[in-house]
Amino acid sequence: MCPILPRALPVVRGQVSSRAGTRLFRPLRPGRMVGKCPARIRAAAGPPNGRGPTDNARRTTNTEHPVAKTTVTFDSAGIPLAGHLYVPDTAGVPGPLPAIVVGHPGTGVKEQTAGHYARRLAERGFVTLAFDAAHQGESGGEPRGLEDPAQRVEDLKAAVSYLTTRGDVDPERIGALGICASGGYVLPAAAGDRRIKAVGTVSAVDVSRQFRLGADGTQDAAVFQGMLEAAAAARTAEARGETLPVLTLFPDTADQARALGGEHGVDGFDYYRTPRARHPRAADFFTWSSVDRIAAFDAFTAVPLIGPRPLLMVVGSRAVTAWMSVDAFQRATGPKELHWIEGAGHVDLYDQERYVDPAVEKLAGFFTRNLGPVAVG
Image 1: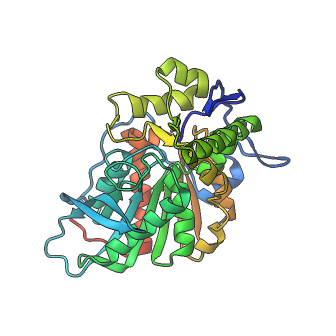
Image 2 (image 1 turned 90 degrees about the vertical axis):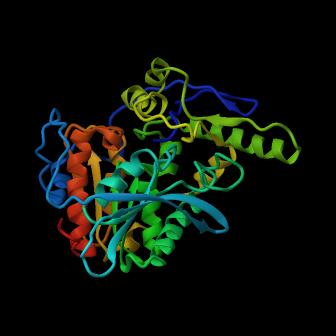
């Protein structure tokens, strides 16, 4: 989940005021519309999952293992990163295990949805690693609150490097899973790092497209131009030793979130700002210097380089951000699947078990096929 951005209001002394609404989809290319679950994409992705949206029972199978969680640290370009390593109890199973790196959303931390998916996949027999990005959570890096796409990509590669040093991990069987913004970051990470053998995403977002175009792709271009002006002013203020403003990520109330971002906005507010999933280390702000770094980033340019390795993109049929997964999917050249979770919105796939359950089932099957079999409990 990224900040709830405005449509068009002026920048005042490095701050952005805002109001916005949302629409579900945008033209992917001139003259081509992406619908809720278009037939041409559904055919490529296979039929939607049949679990009803009211079935919120936790799926239990005979392949689940008890899981041990430990705290680990590793280096990313000189910055210490904090992670949670999830190791399944596979006593009696010979040899090292396949592993999956799990990246968190743009405003999240490892204790939230990334840790949830990491644990769920560890229960299926994978060693998994969820970690805090540099400059965020328990990880090191100054300034705090910096969202640097290049560093975020490097963090994912560093997590892979850490896994290759472990005796309980098979270095030839490492995959990567990105959620929300990490669903964008994992694409160039895998494109450039051949150690990643399979790539999965959930509610994938290219952070640059979200900032420039909005979650639904219809944001007024003046909004991001104003943000770039504010970012430039912040850099000047920093050079002069002045107090720096910050980019606040969420409004104060759910009503304000709805007014700014519609259902998508209020869903994000509910996840990050209420007891549902709020965490004291989750990001409340980004530095303004994040914005010009984000401006020059494109998560999808290198997607063709992922092939011939496989790509699975899981997306909710109600997700306002679905157009970004469709865009990335269409660029992939290797084995690929776009899997729709019927009835799910973008944030529903973070923690709502009636949607997370089928997502985990799909991901576990995908990684098992492409990283090799895991032990059966």
